[in-house]
Length: 311
Image 1 (cartoon, rainbow, N blue to C red):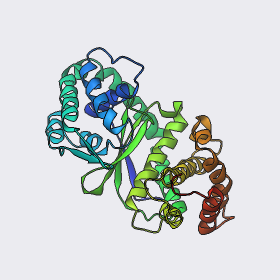
Image 2: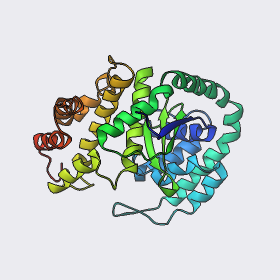
Image 3: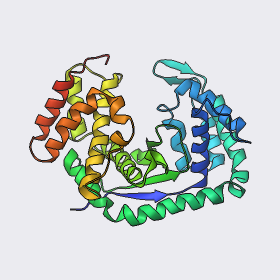
């Protein structure tokens, strides 16, 4: 069984430059690279309002579809004040300064840093085209079958960049409900973890495409809502999100390499996830092995974790 949905690897200088600025802005202990000061300073002003991760979607998503000049125009059209989670923010000014500063960096970036960066990125694309892409539709089909997601039959762009802000990979909505992902080529520190991260971000895109259907994540969120949890509760996000990591790692083992070491084990992700990872690692592989039904597996996870509103 293969999937109609596929991933398309892309490299783009503007995307690479923009997320390099985002990466430098997130690292408050380091001075910006020479010439990057105005862009990083503006990004840090935005970051003070939105945080370094989450909340940037209306800004970040523009860079995948627009030119630098068009991003300046788009950011100039942000509502003022900008309403976010009950707060009124003066976002437009810093956002426009960020877009203008990145636009100003582009000519020097294209003539200076970009050729070396492009060679590195294209080498990673070549590796993935050999080792990942030939079986990736089989991997996506396995994930969709495991997660109860109907194949949306779409092509999802995956932009590879030199570096970006933590956690190193993100997925966004574009206009019309399409999704796009961006990830740093060094994420996880190994070839296999880069491949797992591609599958993890693909899980996000599949989840976004199946919000109206009876997927595993939909059923899990309903169980959490039945306990009184809402989108504002950390557990409402963390319990499904950890399962995404586990499913991606298990897919790597079943399709690519039985000895694959999961991102959660190779990094401190499972350790940071605490009891959520312990419980899901004990239950979910049993479901994938056919020992438990989907509903039984989800029930066991939620009952064992016993999440409460405010968690």
